[in-house]
Length: 116
Length: 111
Image (cartoon, rainbow over all chains, first blue to last red; front, side, top):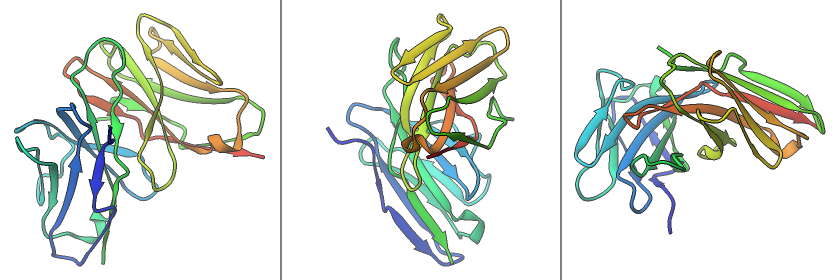
C-alpha cells in the first residue's frame, strides 16, 4: 500500500532548461494537489487536478508553469525555462473524494529543485 | 488572498510546557479543519482534524480547539517534547474539495 510517490527527489537544472516533476498518488486517490515551499516560506497551493481535469490553478504562475494528470500515469508539473527563483521544494498530495470522516491529504516526500 | 492565516511564523517553548499554535480563517463556510506537521526535507504529515460540529478534538498530547464565531482554531501540545520541533500547518477544505493551507508556524521545543 504505497504512499504518494514523487520523483525525482532532487533535481538540478540550469537557467533556461525545463523541469519535469512527477507524482503518483496513493492507490484509489483521484485528486492531486501541487504545492510549493520556497526557502523560509510556508506551503503555497499551486494547482488542484482530477484525472484529465484541472480543477483549480489559481496558485500557478501565469507563465512557464503547467500541470497535467492524464488518464494513465502520474501527474506532471512542468516548468519551462527555469529561473533561479523557481528553486524550491515541490510537494504533491493526493486525496480520495471528500466523504464524511477522514479528509486529509496525503503528501509525498517532495522534489527539491535547484536552479543553477 | 490568504484564506487561512498563521500569524506567528515561529514559536519556542521549553520541554514539558504547553505549545499553543494559532490559526485564523476567513470564510465561515469552512467546516473541516486539519493540522499537519512537517519535518525538514519531508512531506507534511497529518496530525489531527476537527469538524465544525465540534469545538474540541483530542488525540493524546494534541488537542485542537475551534471557535467558529471568531473563525479561529488552535493546536495545543502538552507536554511539549523536543521531537515536536517541526513546522505546523493548519488547513481547511471547502465544499469543492479544495484545500487551503496556512503559511506555517515553526515550533522549537527547547530541552
